Length: 64
Image (cartoon, rainbow, N blue to C red; front, side):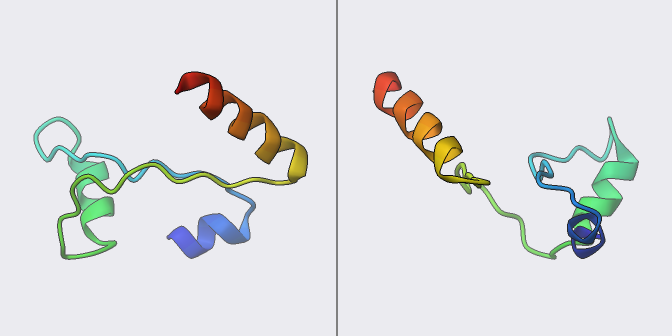
């Protein structure tokens, strides 16, 4: 599914938490990606160009 999304231009997909009781469809989909539970994976960023990278870097600098 992730490959399919990438082929169609999807740049982001929330692989955050899953909850079997509240959202069984998302639980089923996301549990099919891996059989290992991942905790505290962290934040990752993707840039389409140098300007986007500069803007994000500046924002992170100010945030500190």
